[in-house]
Amino acid sequence: MRAIVAGHICLDFTPRLPADAEIVPGTLREVGPMTVSAGGCVYNTGSALAESGIEVVLAAEVGRDVLGDLLAEQLRDEGFAAELSRSPERATSFSIVLERPGDDRSFWHHVGACADFDGSRVGLADADALHVGYPSLLPALAADGGRALLALLARARSNGLLTSVDLAVVDETAEAAAIDWTDLLARMCALTDVFTPSIDDLRSALSSDATDDATDVVAHAEWAIAHGAAVVALSAGSRGSFLAVADEDRLRRVPGALSLHAPAWSGYRGWVPAAPVDVVRTTNGAGDAHSAGFLAALLRGADPGTAARCAAEAARARIQGLPIRESIPQ
Image (cartoon, rainbow, N blue to C red; front, side, top):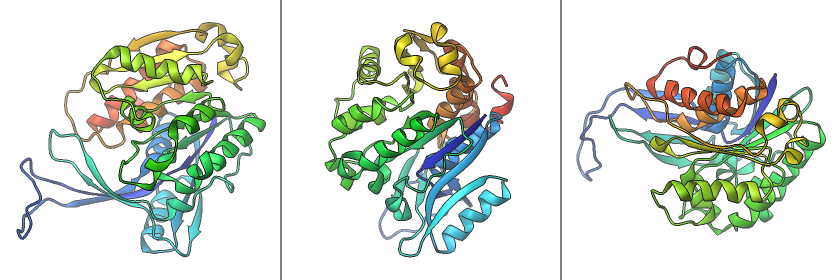
């Protein structure tokens, strides 16, 4: 199986912070060493898919700068096939990841060259699936009502690829907040076979009120199914994830394993609890690992319950800093 993972990529700069770290103007505070690694959906999901045994090609836009060189070198060193367009005008995207022990992470993010990614140069030959990550952080992909995003998904479907999309939270202060995401996502779902956002991602895009209600999670998943998505695996943190699947007629139009196993998947609804975590090493990339675990299992022909459990186990492995390959069935 071969998957193309396209969209948002960056370098993550993660200082090791003490538990009581805070920003106080005019002071100096010692912290631990800085970890520099590839990040963003393209790398996080792509590396998790690769760990799960899926052949991966990474497609993204980076700057023609030192950070772009560093990112390209890391991908080469890790053995990834990567189609990186190099922008001469924009800097490579980066995130400063602020994560105190025991706390969820927060990000300071520069979109940089990702702003130019529109999917037009993504090669689709000899692939089984296309996974697109974080359109809200890809201005060119989301512009004009998501014209480029819809074109990329339509092109993938015409080439016989399963289409998969993940979201990021829409920053209320960013240009992306001005987009009519309800309309864009409604049209996107009709071209999306597998949709794997978190409930926070989807609520922010649809401008929904945040609640801690399982019924609300189910309602958001049903919204995506009603607008044409074939499979929705909606993660909800410690609550677990909710899986909703369209009817058999919709599944028959999905290339590959999902079409072949349509009767086993058709109409499925169910919660899968989050896998228990013994030690929290990091929450960075956990949602991407969840998407990758689910997609890898689906591509191999797993039943819906197994695919959802593989997603939970992949997220658990990422949080605990364990190898994903040893955590889910191959």
